[in-house]
Length: 344
Image (cartoon, rainbow, N blue to C red; front, side, top):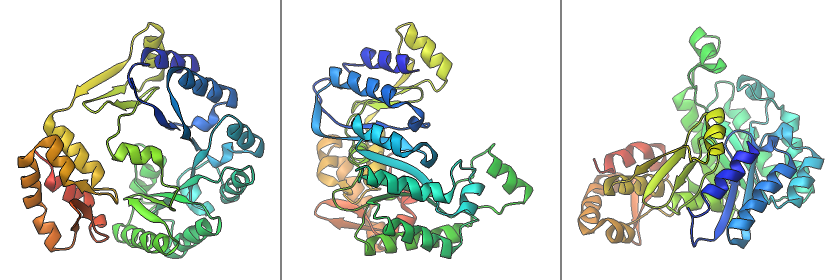
């Protein structure tokens, strides 16, 4: 797999031509299973092929049970300067329901040890809306996060994916399904509590202290081109999307033959507008009417300005300095609002 990743980098080295690299993100699957030497090989190849900015953000997604003190020191030594840790919860009953490999003590330990070795830029994932998570437990999860002085939180509502152990338990009635009202209340409390602690709610699911917003994810939401390498990885050059085959064996075989196992989709003007709308309205920066006019034309801007009026009137959206933004009330229904505003 590592050999195939390196070979794909060679095959794609012109994809981001004339663009410096500001963020590198090891994600998807469990990259913390890679050895530090393997991570170093991948980083070295990027350095050979691209201009890397001096303040590059290099993130590694990790499971708590993979992060020992030794591993953390090694990761820091090869340039990993940001961790995205899949904590999910600081309660064992939640972790057991989600079939996580770590326990609550490991969740706490890995954050503290990462900070001890000098990695302060840490994001943790939290899950709300689980049938096992009472409001009191959710409050405790948030308070533990604040006590640890973690500067970034990505929070997601529990989803019951088909053909999983959790889906089977819900179907059998041994575990209740996600309560939408409970989930909404916990999301509302998340917004209130993080705001009180000085976090910026800069994307629907993401909260960061000033100076600790994810550069990588922010670039994606702002429509900056990116290159994805590996099975199922997606890339975007501003005009087209492409994605690699998800099958590991097929990916390795095709790369070995010198082929890029990717499908390419040329985006229409309408699709590019819808994509910009979908990403921008989920962020605190909002949708720029000036950009809409420059990229998509005056008619699209005029139609969008008319279409948002009902949402402005009911307080779901707000207009600030030529930017359409979602209000706190609108955050609960943002996907539906965006859907209504898309071009068909």
